Structures are given as structure tokens and as C-alpha cells.
Image (cartoon, rainbow, N blue to C red; front, side, top):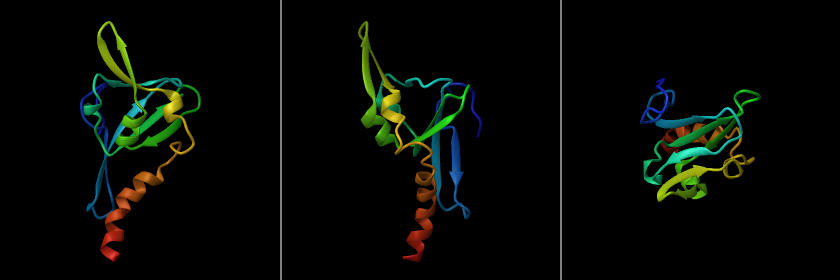
Amino acid sequence: MPTTRNARGVDIIAYNRDCSRMVSIQVKTLSQRSPVPLGNSLDSIMGDFWVIVNEVAYEPKCYILEPNEVKKRAHRGEKEGRVSYWLQPQAYCIPDFQDAWGKIEARLRLHEVEEIS
């Protein structure tokens, strides 16, 4: 489901094989190892997962986080009375998040495991 730049809402919706489970994914793409802008409130963070792809101009690296992980690591900035939130590279460029595609797969497989139990 492609969107235009900075469109509201999630960027990708994925289903498991029988369409009984769905996950929504917010994608942030950065040309360098840069902070991810989160907006002026953490309440607007949506989706089941965030996929951050940085260094796309060189050798892309992917980091997969859940919204609670994004919120927990968010940096609050204030300039001229305006508040903004950012996810600094040192908060998301860590081994636990890099190429952690299994998080998404595990969520999609959860339904199958529940049926077997």
C-alpha cells in the first residue's frame, strides 16, 4: 500500500497466509544515520511495528521496533516553546533491533500457535 511522502497512517499492512492475523507497519527511511522525527506528540505513534531504514544512499540497514520501544527511547526537544520528539540513532541503531524481522513473523504466527494449543 504505497503512500505519498509524510501521508498520515501506516505504510504497510501485512497478513498471515490465511488472513486471520494482520500487522500494520510504519516505515521511516533516512539517507544517513540520522534521528527519526516523531512529531510533537508521542500519542500519534501508530502501527504494530516501526521499520527504520537508514543509510539508504550507501548500504541500507533496517531496524524493527514496536511502538512502545519507540516511545520509551524517544528524545524530547524544545525550541522556542515548541516541543518535538526524535528517535536518536544511538536509541535505535542497536543489535537487538537490526534485521529483527522475526518480531513481525512471530506476531503473524501467533494465531496459528493459539489454534494448536
